[in-house]
Image (tube, one colour):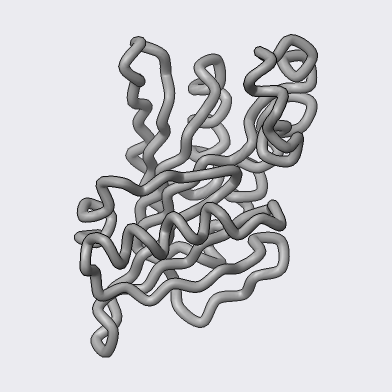
Length: 171
């Protein structure tokens, strides 16, 4: 947990997570997931670890295939959450992003379902998950988390007053 607060320059890219957990021998470790082939986001994580002089072991994994040796205390995620309808009217700057980084399925919730269904495979009981959401998704994402073994589900607003982050504790 301390490691996350010491990463002020951390940039969470397309469908990426930072999972941290204490480890007696190395301090903390981080798991970085990405559904994209690019290693750019992972390089940001490694750079932040170095800049902040954090005792943190990092490795990259594919959420669709990964089976951990250790469970994380904290997972921070920015999954693709744009709906099929919203994909048709994106700003031109956003359209330059890879579709895999944006499209979250017909209703924008596909990756939240995946995270909720697999949470017990990568998150400790009592572990906390933070996910970015689309500003219209708070009610649906909250319901998914509550029905998937999470408690203390909270929504936080961004600087514009829009619902933007859901936090939840895994039972």
